[in-house]
Length: 177
Image (cartoon, rainbow, N blue to C red; front, side, top):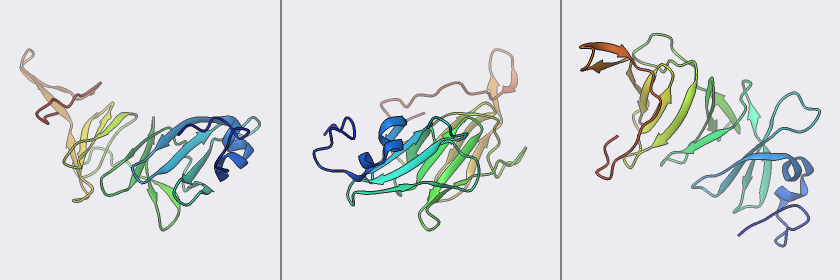
């Protein structure tokens, strides 16, 4: 189904009754739970406004922030948790608090995540979330709640461990990354 604008809303969805939502939406994500996540910059506001719209219940609610997070990119894992990231921020939506909580970086720690900027996130078929950053590739399986850190990559050409600045990744047909 396509809903173009608040003036073209045949099913009377509440999200299109909100002028800021309807007129200034510039980022949108539909997760596996049929929740629509949006972010918009409204003229005159100093920060982005984000919404969480439940398509099943026809409920629109602004997303609370516990830090200055601008929702831009999203991944919803197999357990139903929605992760938001953009540049220097990684956060997860907490259903109890009804807000996005920032995941803190742990500088030079093998038990946390360290980054200056996140480039991408991806969830594989096993439920592992892969986070590509300027300081390396991290894997995180929400069922176990810990990060695996790769700080360096062995270079066969240079015969030494080099910087782990990851710029991309690809999952092959056999499931390997």
